[in-house]
Amino acid sequence: MTGLGHASALIETAHGSVLCDPWVNPAYFGSWFPFPDNSELDWDEIGKVDYLYVSHLHRDHYDTENLKRISKSATVLLPEYPTDELHDALRDLGFTKIFRTKNGEVHDLDGLKVMIQALISPTDGPIGDSSLWLDDGTTKLLNQNDARPTELSAFAELGHVDIHMLQYSGAIWYPMVYELTDHAKRVFGEQKRARQFDRTLRYIDDLEATWVVPIAGPPCFLDEELWQFNDFGTDPGNIFPDQQVFLDHMAEKGRGNGVLLLPGSVCDFDVEGAPVEHPYDPATVFGANKEPYLRAYQERKKAALEAEKAGWAHPEIELLPALKEWIEPLIKQADTIATGINGPVRFTALSAELGDVDVLFDFVNREVRAYDGERVRYRFTAPRELLEHLVAIHEIDWVNSLFLSCRFTAHRVGPYNEFVYAFFKCLGEERLNYAEGWFAEQNTDDENIELEGWEVQRRCPHLKADLTKFGKVEDGVLTCQMHGWKWRLEDGKCLTSVGHPIRSAHAGA
Image 1 (tube, rainbow, N blue to C red):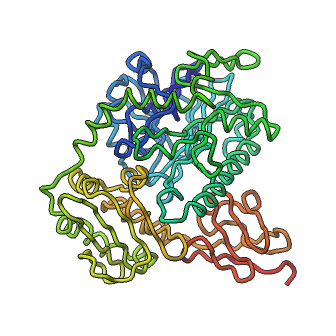
Image 2 (tube, rainbow, N blue to C red):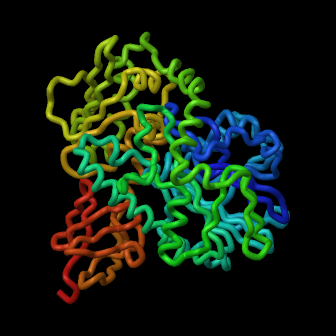
Image 3 (cartoon, rainbow, N blue to C red):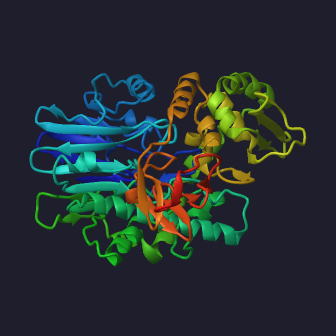
């Protein structure tokens, strides 16, 4: 395996080579850059592969410009998603050899066995995320990347996994962008960081692979406005710990089977001990050397970032009428999601030169109009040019653009509401109709389990995680460590989001 940065890797098997998630160019309004820098790799040579796997459409996995450099003779291993967006995007780039996998089914491709498990809830990536399992007859590998399946039994049942690649670091905007005190941000950040590590260790322990390769994070932030999001080891609430930090954590917890891959690192898993040849000393990019490394990286990318920023503004767009024409018909169709939001969402587009535009997305009266002083539970604030750019390119997924950029602030009164973010990643009819149907079909299961003296339903009301594995009870509160959701067991109330109560009672009652 050759590490290529972030979730990117070149896997050479006995029956062909597989390129995974080749991301190079900055993503999310120029906020995210691969760490360490992978732009000097020979991507034209790397792209001469037999198979291409793009796990999902998040832009730190699906890089349009870099995918243009990948050989079009490669066979695409396509997850079975409910929409054709990934298929159509790759087809538009010139990929014609597309193998449509069946979800959870093992396919034999001339000796290389392949299985892709696709996650298809509206909260999984941009309407979908996936994991890739490979077996070339000698070695079995699972590339889990960003995916969070409720369990890994589907892979374990196929035999012992030799190599387990998975995410361990943050890929979100919480709590950094929320209008909270610095103390609250630190506390919530520490909680999230701990959940990230706990969840990753649970996956590692469930699969018991011979080798573990931490991938899919973190990005680095080279724009000075976002510099504080980089983790330099001084903030225990930073949610973007790097590879070395997590490998040290693994070792502290008694798991010494981690493998560090830098961009250009080569690991031969067929050799005892899985020796790694690095292109440079890892110490030059981690620990005390990380900040000077990023400063030099920042200087190299300064011109490219400035060029990207120059293309955002579209002052010719009348923002409120454009948003009303585009989004109001979608709100009228979104019966389940609108009911779940059950209130107005305020979006303020800031501009010192052109003036602010204050928009209200009213999910009760199903309309988009100017904000007029109404009380709101959910508020977002962002530079006007970013909203203009979203309108100009008709971006149907604001999570996969604005929100992951961290170039906004958020405020809410009360618990998290997943329907808000679900709506803003479904600003197109195909996605919206799918999400509506998915949410409408979700029902609580009937099986109960016992946890720490409480009888609760086995499956998490959020995304059906098995609470025998991911449930933890402390002081009468159940936490599902898959995503950190909480319930008060005395009455089953969800403390994390609107709705989603859990069935609970004292055991034996």
